[in-house]
Amino acid sequence: MKKFVFVLATCLMAATAGWAQTLTGTVTCEGQPVAGVCVSDGVEVVRTDVHGCYAIQSAKEQGFVFVITPSGYTVPLRERLTPQFWARLTEPADVVENHDFVLEKQKQDNYTVIFTTDLHLQHSPKLNDFDMARQLVVPLAQRLYAENIKKGPVVTFQLGDLVQDRYWYQYDMDPEKARVFLRDSGFTAPLYSVMGNHDHDGARLADEQHPDITRYAEEPWREACGPTYYSMNIGNDHWVMLDNILYYNEAPPRSGEGKYGMKGNRRFEVGLTEGQFAWLEKDLAMVPAGTKIRVCGHASFILPKTIGKDTEFADPAQVDRLYKMLRRFGPVNFYNGHAHRMYLARNPRYPDDGGILIGRFGKGEPSYAYETYLHGSKQLRAYDMNTVRANILENKKAQERIAEFSYCTDYSTAERENQIYVNAWMLLPGYTLEMYEGSHKLDVEQVVEAEPLSLAGNNGKSFFTHKSYVQCHHLYRATASSPKSTITIKVRNDKGKVVYQEKMRRPKPFSLDME
Image (cartoon, rainbow, N blue to C red; front, side, top):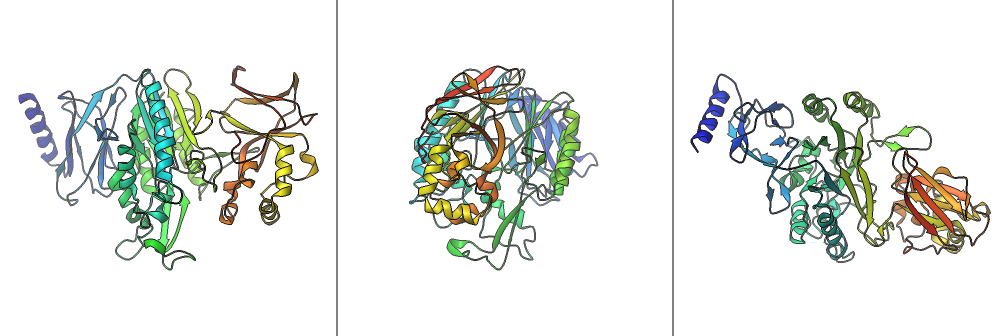
């Protein structure tokens, strides 16, 4: 006890020794100070001294101070779910406030990340999304946690759109209530989150008092989930969590808005603020060379295409800036949501069977698996285009959409006969996809076309006005010689080993319930 009091006194003396520091505190583990730990206010990044003390000259503009957990440590949880790596700032900028952080030792030779995204919790009586979350999402997450916790730590990264902004007031469902729902439903793994475009409060408008609408509209999320950007170390990996949604909301409201508390012309762009770039540069300066950098955000940073690369960023030059900042660390992995690949199952607007991505990290390259809510572990969906064609020829809505929107591929034409399409959502860099008709290897080509299942759903017209909702960048096509032959699909890794295989018996039905 005397030693801790002495350490605290040392910190206070350092903070008042002629420096205009406004944030101070200690970082300890098992009652002992931990030196060299990075602490940040979202602008500056400092290290604790030999006494575990930190001091930051902060304008408190981000409203938080957070510890960047070092490798081999984690933090306590609030209510079994929320990691306590951050503290809310409550005093004016010129008032000194103290926030201490406690670390817990953790063996991190191997660890697992459960990636969830786009839950869009609404508490809607029409969608029954709470029931689906209780019956599908939480049980799957619990099983994955139980299966992997035996091998090492397990954390959850929630990659945005935890809630659905337009229903906050209609169904009384904001980010804090969503967090409490997950807690009370038995969600187990520590939950780290980034913001999505639907996590902003659509009832808040830009005005003279609140010119920074992005900051103003994200306040409810910040109250529930903490900083909108931060970082942490796990094992040999440095995880950077970024907020790449630039949100705008000005009067007057767009057509159809104004119901249930919504105001203004809600819209967003994909990008980073200058403040995030400045903070990221300081954060990365503390990271040793040889560390693997992994970046999370809601929207896509880079979209792979058949030829070249594209990005959702409104300013592609920002991707170049990121590349220059990150290139000294070698290849960087990006993880994002926004594409609704893990959306709650059985929503007719997004007919894909949602699921959870599992990443296993440690020595060597990580491994990934995708567990769907309804069909177990799958890496792809295969289409018999003969049955797809027959369905579209009888589907008047699909024909209307194909006629109106040029990017809705017309799968009703005669050239589709005996074609096989595969949506391979787990094809990692260096992996290849092969198709066999019996023992005969078919010629496979990658195409960027409409995801066939998007034309089968009862989608509203607004769904098809977004090209990105319809087109798929990981479709593969081949042509068989018979309409009844069985097709074997194999995925090989970069070393040529078959890591996934499934057979498609034809004719294969085409419907929303297909695997």
